[in-house]
Image (cartoon, rainbow, N blue to C red; front, side):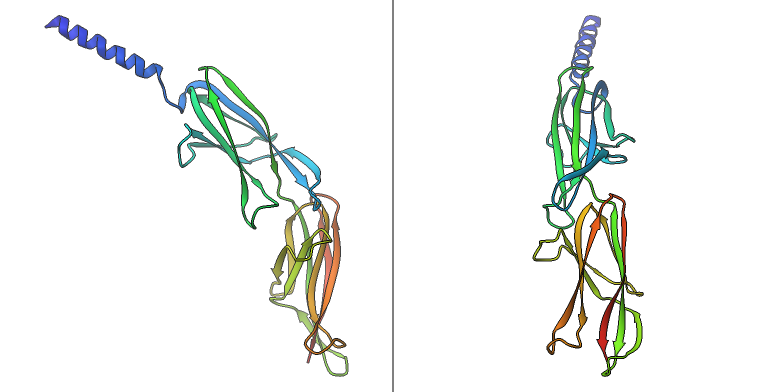
Length: 241
């Protein structure tokens, strides 16, 4: 009876040791996956004009390669570096997101990197992962309405509320890239822009135009530095009264 108990105990220990030696993907080990996120700024022509280590940028890890959701995340340091520590051997997926100039409006681009840890103390360095950065420049202004009588005299003026203003990235597009509806005081601004050339335009009633036609007001603007705020000032539109 005692011998059978001893044998059963030894078998249990054996299977426990096998289980302990065959840990699945996840934490509990001594391996590391690390890397660095580098953000690049491009101008309206797609040329890289600036780059830096992306601070406070989210990076995600999936344990295994068939999970629907991520298992952990890391916010990059001041220099864009990140690392996931205490990992077991196995397969992992590292992913992050980048701004995407060619994607549909509001969508980001997914960057996904499969990683395999083969040794229990391995340090896998993914190196530099480049993302497209969101710009930090602004173009702003204000639309003012002048009410004009039949004699061409300005009766009164006010900030144009809910008036459409448009922006073109570059200066050779046939269609606009974004629009803005003015605030209660006629103000507008386009944020998160990269360096480069832009065109701001809006429409005004026209005294001298053919009936039913509006007048186009187009203003070119150039952003020379990544954090510029370009104030194009007051844009006057006419309302015939």
